[in-house]
Structure formats: C-alpha cells, structure tokens
Amino acid sequence: MYDKERGLYIAHSAKGALSITGKMANRHGLIAGATGTGKTVTLQVMAETFCQAGVPCFMADMKGDLSGISQVGQMSGFIEKRLPEFGLESPEFQACPVRFYDVYGEQGHPMRATVSQMGPQLLSRLLMLNEVQDGVLNIVFRIADERGLLIDDLKDLRSMLDYVAQHAKEYTTRYGNISTATVGAIQRALLQLENQGADKFFGLPAFDIHDLMATEGGKGVMSVLAADKLMLQPKLYSTFLLWLLSELYTTLPEVGDLPQPKLVFFFDEAHMLFDGTSKALLDKIEQVIRLIRSKGVGIYFVTQSPTDIPENILGQLGNRVQHALRAYTPKDQKAVKTAADTFRANPDFKTDEAIMQLETGEALVSFLDEKGAPSVVERAKILFPLSQIGAISEAQRSSIIRQSIIFGKYDKAVDRESAFEQLLAASEQQSQEAEEVAEEATAPKEKGSKAEKSKPTIINKVMKSVLTAVTSTLAALLGTYVSNKVSGKTSKSRTSTKEKVVKNATSAATRTITRELTRDILGNLVK
Image (cartoon, rainbow, N blue to C red; front, side, top):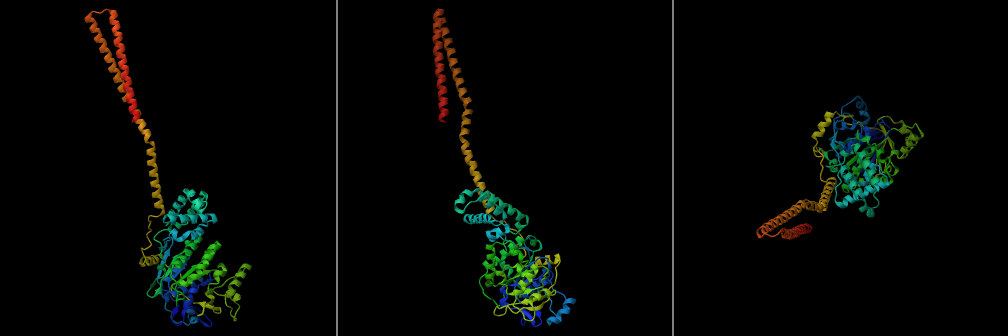
C-alpha cells in the first residue's frame, strides 16, 4: 500500500516497514520463487501500491487471478490475523482502475501490431528462422521499403515473399542469393504462426503504447493482459512483450530518474523471454532493459529462479523479492546458492538456508536505497492486497470492457491498401497488358482469314467473266450463221468463218479471265 510516511510499502520485517524508493523504482526488479510460494500475490501487492501512488502498470495475467485487482477486497480471517504484524487496525480496501487487453480480442481490448512495426529481427525469432532464412526476410523488408509497400499483416508479408521469389534474379546481384526453397520455408513458418492465431495480432489499428500510461482519479490504470491462452504459444507471448518493450523504448523521451516511474512493466513467466534466444537478440534485450529506465519505465521480472535470467540482465535488477526455493537435486541446490549470492548478506542469518525455510507469503527482500545501493537483505512478510484476491466473473469483465474509455478504439480490425492489394493490382495490370500484346500478335492471322473469306468473291468474278465470254462467243456464232444464210455461202466457207469466230471469241474470253484474276489477286496482295 502507499502512504506519505511509508511510501511504496510492500513488506514488513522485524525491523519495520520495507518500501521501494520511488525514484529507484525504475531500476527494475525481480520476484522469484517456487510455484505456490506467493509470487502472484506479491505482484498484485506491488501493482496496486504503484496504482495508489499514481503509477500505471502493465501485467500479464496467466491464470486470470490478477483480474481481481479491479474489485474491492474484503476482510478475511487470515487478513484479520495478520493486521497486528503490519501495525494496521482497519485497512481501507479498494479497487484499482483496470483495462483488460487480449491479443486474440476475446477477453479484452485487442492489442495489434503491424508486421513492419515488429520488424525482421523479432519476426525471425518468432518464426524460429535460421541464418539464411533470416537474411532473406531482411531482404524482403528492404525491398518493401524501397518500393513503398506497407506490410501490415501476414497476407501482406506472404505477398511480398511471393513477389521477391518471382523477381529473385533482379535482386540477387544487389542483395545476395534468394532461393525459392528458402522463401518456401519462411512461408511454411508463417502458416504455423497463423495456426497459432497470430493473424489476429498482426494488423490495424496498431496499439498506441501511450494508452498504457493513463491515470484515473489520481490512480494509475492497471493494464491487465489476458495471457492464459497466449502462454500456450510461448514464442508469440515473449515476442509480443519484447515488441511492447521495444515500442516503449523507441517512443518515450528521455526523462532520467523521476520521483516515481511513468510506467511499471511486470513480465510474468520471464524465462520464456530468454529460451532459445540468439546471442544478437539477447544483446538487444539487454540494451533495451539497461536503457529503458532512463525513459521512466521500470521492468519487474517474475519467474521461479534467478537462474532463469541471464547474468548480465540479472545484475540490473535492483529491487528484489525472493520467495522460497526447494533444493531436492544438485541443480536445485546450485539455484539456491545463486539466489543467495545475489543479495547483500545479513549477519543475522544465512541467506541460502533462509531461502529454503521461507513460508508462503514470506520472502527475502532487498530494495535500493536513496543512493541506488542495495539494502541488506531482510526476511519479511509481504503485505496482503487491498483488492480482491482471485479471478472475477465473465459478466464483471465484460462490464469493465464496455465502460472503458478506449472501448471501440481497437475492437474493429481495419484492412487498408497495403502490399497485398498493391501487388495484386500490379499483377492484374501486367496480365491485362500481356493480353493486349497477345491480341496484337494474332491480328495478322485474322487479316489472312479475311483474305481467305474473300476467295469466293474472286471465284464469282471469274465465273462471271467466263459466262460473259461464252455469251459473247455464242452471240458471234449466231451472227455468223445468219450472215451466211443471207449471203448463200458454202458450208466450207461457213466452217472457216466459224472457226475464226470461235478462235477470236476464245482468245477474248481468255484475256478477260486472265485480266480479272490478275486484278483480284494483285488487289488482295496489296491489301
């Protein structure tokens, strides 16, 4: 709980109250302990203490338990028994303003990001690509930038991969080899990602991280992410939260050490962030965690053992709460020793022994002092929450979602004109142009067919010429016959005259036919 005298009051030891120093709250922290030792309750106590101080928080709710922070707590026999231990008489139970979020949009406001915002590095980790595949993915993003193509969702990325594969020869000399096999492997990885429901995460409207830093009535708003389904896809869960941290880092201005942080980020099941992470990405995570505190953001990792956190990052976690650990195997004993070595020793007890003796709700606590130095570790009892412990009903959740000030801002997906639509339009235009070229190429054949269709016209003309010639010949023969009758010439002279007439008529017909055929043939050739 928060008050002016005790500040961010979290736990109580034999020596008194243990509080987080406000201006050191952005120096990050760790909540560790075995399953069932009270980590979730400690997270809730910390979150609502920050809330009362006006500091907004973001937390992932793995089992739905943290949703109770939205409801007023109630007195119980257990709490009543512990009141004297904390020097309290009648606690003021209160709820925190809450906004529920869900990557899948089922139990809260959707949280989306575009593929371009995620970037090739985080996306490569999400897809578990090898070095060669990662290189091709970077090429795809570079080409999209050069062509001004927006990659909003997975269908945009698929279209870009298909485009790059089809034009691989154009880009190979500039960026390196792009094989269809590698592109196919990335496409298969995208299919697996879609089957996990990632297609609901990628798209528009993209989430505005400034919505995480809201206050209501002087209290910090608690942003609770429903993660019971999301945690079943550990790569998507860790990559999403890492993207969120990266967005905070790149968007927020430098503010240094404020009296209190602008935002506190609780990363539950933190080991998922580091499992299977490449050295390059691990260095990036370390850089973000080291530098984001200057943006006024504190990160608190929640996990079972400090050994789940890489040493370089573990050394940056100044505010620590260590719940009980069990040491049944040599590996467990090593984890206990590692956890003990991270604390500033207390001469009153042995830290490694105390870790194994802690009861539920009890922890070893060490917070940074005003100068940024870790305090001597104390064995203490964590405060009880003033809000409800445990999950709320679906009706209560729905009511809170509908009454939220951001209700409707992210709930409806938007599909603007991006790479998929632009590449599809370009492909259709190319197909249309190809059809026009094909039509022009087939045009001469069509003219030839017309010429063939005109052949009956030529034949008709020839037949007409023949008939004209025959008619003329018959007329000449008839005229000769009449003349001979009138003049009384002999049959011999008639025969001679007939032969001459026929010969002349035949020659005339031949000349007429030849002339007509030549004219028609030459005319069609000229056409």
